[in-house]
Amino acid sequence: MIGCFLLPISQAFLLQSEERRGVESIVIFGERISLKLSGADCNGGCTIFENVTPPKAGPPLHRHSRQDEWFYILEGDYLFEVEGKQMTAGPGCSAFAPRGTAHTFQNLSSSPSRMIVVSQPAGMDMFFNELSAAMKDMREPDMSVLMPIFEKHGIEFLGPPLAARAKATTESAS
Image (cartoon, rainbow, N blue to C red; front, side):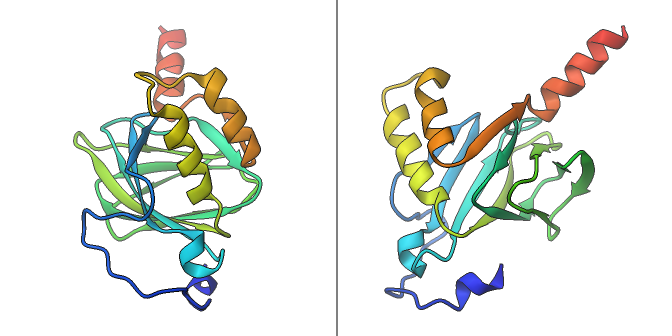
């Protein structure tokens, strides 16, 4: 993952805490995603974004065929699942999901949690740009419109989010 920082950057820049590169922050599956470094910024080396996850929320179980992902927790507590193995992580912890692995996470906190995510090589920035454009006039995500974008970028959905799986397990046990 360090390698993306060794590539020549096309132009130096500084972002303030609320600033982002490229598109406005987007919200997908409840998570607010703000691009901090695009592939164009580092010759395709990586994409870095800030992810704010609502309480008890997180994305569906999924797999990236093209990018490794590294997560660094800034605030809150998360439960990560990578290839069926569950791990909890709080501020200062990091988790890694190599490309090709089934993974997801859930904010365990009662308030929004934040993390920095590095995906290598770049490409997630283009994915977020396309999602943002497709979702511009949507009130709720329309998966018939969004799924082709996920597929184009090598992202495969494998199952529901952790919270939904936990709820289903609890309901089936009672």
